[in-house]
Length: 431
Image 1 (cartoon, helix red, strand yellow):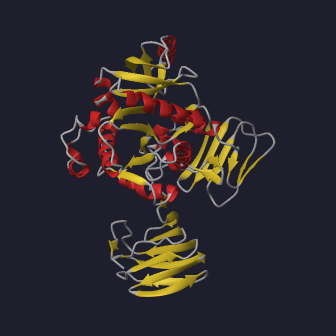
Image 2 (image 1 turned 90 degrees about the vertical axis):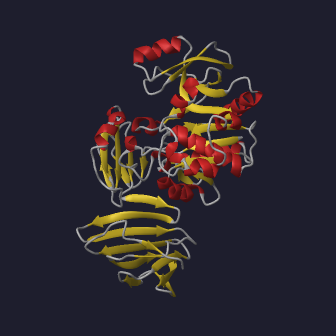
Image 3 (image 1 turned 135 degrees about the horizontal axis):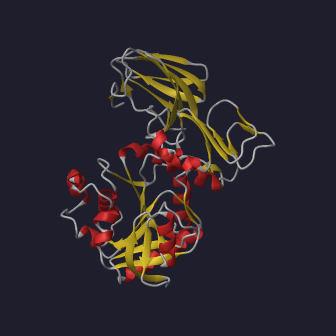
């Protein structure tokens, strides 16, 4: 299969663990074979297990590239938008990318799906059925429709002409009220899970570009709209493949806690009177909960949430009012956590993965001090290389070029001192 995974969004519904830097698909809360894994790791691994030779391209924004490499490694195909312009431009760009990078022909089929549903292996078997249906060419676009388990107001609905496994789409319905949802289900309506397939030439022949570079360089000319509005809802010949298995949108706390293998993650203690409560603690301190019922608690460097599970689905409008910078981020080289932010001083904990390094850079308006907490590494300071290990301290004056490489897993405390500590104060150099 040729699959485009859409990875976007800022995940405000899972605040404080998600933010403008760490979207929901990067939160490691799902139990995997080797510990906790993210939605991205789970879905990507499931695809590879079902189709080890499949072509997978992740369509995303520049802000997520580093985190994707952190979760999946360097050997992953990523199509990066020059700017965020909604799903229509993103899918168009990714289709050119997968065609050129994977040598696809115009009659080859591409499947587009979100990166963050909670699904089991039967979902990927239906993706294969979706692929086969699209290859047959009876429909210009083929969608996957999920049989509803409830009259949900969270999803759009697809109304097919009949109840066959594969059928023609009669109409689409926007996210409804509960009463309308019940009516759609009586009509045979299925959840629109945002999964669809088409032949490469179908989409590219609608666009006035000749190559990936051409569309990339003219990206700002593309209409800023969704693929559903621009393409799907204008197409009359649409087919549908029915899916009856597990499909969950775990973009809210009450939905996510339903699939957590354990009630607690991190340093958490619950008393015997606590019931149906899930607690996630990313802080380096104990968290005690007593007598709670039907509650979700999430604690991170960005903040602390305490909510009933029912009310947690309405978090977005409140989280958007909390204007703070992200205190934690994952990068291709590891991660950083802001420990303390003063007026002229910033303290950060840096974790470097083995054989990874920071970029060789300098600052014009701040000094830095590195203290190695654990591991071994190699520092390059103004052209001089030297080894460092636990307990070593390195002073880096402003304008000095510097980087550090982890020879094994490395933890470093970085203290930035200056009157103007901003991200823009960074100059990248070649080593």
